Image 1 (cartoon, rainbow, N blue to C red):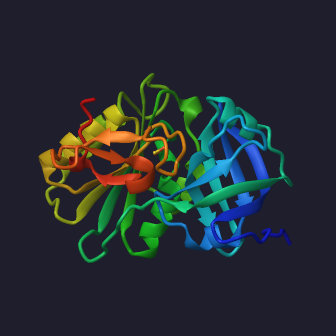
Image 2: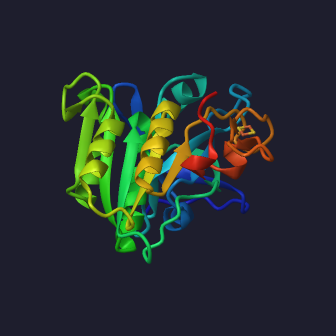
Length: 273
Ligand code: FES
């Protein structure tokens, strides 16, 4: 039986069960931690201390990808792009990870209003969609997944998604699998074919241009749309002000993704900058 190491209430440690590359430059790490596995909500993230020295100085934020309450683990999915994630990629199973979380707000689901949800993930934006699909099914909301990547080799966690729903649409920019083009076009085509919109909503995570376009599509069909922003974070605790996003509200022109997000209504955010 793996052990969660007890610590104070804000900082946790957990044993790494595996840490492996699942697509070129993308890794999945499984961490043994009962509390996070039981209490995390879709959209929330953890801040990992990736190094014991000062480089990088700040903890790094990672979206919670999947959880298993009975087996006491949760997963993160991450792209190896900087010094922090390079160090993380070298962590071996059996090592202990130090992190804070779960942090941030989360996707909201109301089964009294919504019967079917469109889960749109662009690239690594698929990260919160596995835990979200699971959460929706528990609330009798049917998830339909739209997953866009540049090429087939970048697809991650398809078996996890396929275990949760048979409704999965894939789009690749190079046409190597699924529809050729952007996943937003697939969402648009799907919504165009519907006759009723009042029991639908959209959840999305991915690059800002994708979220921007999706917000426009959602507005066109009058479908509520929540977006989880992938803005680069420095500190993840509201200290560096590096994660500001412009809003459409002149009285509150910026929101800070790490403290106020990462989930917002698509209509709140001004993606033009
Ligand atoms: S990441 Fe530093 S304030 Fe949000």
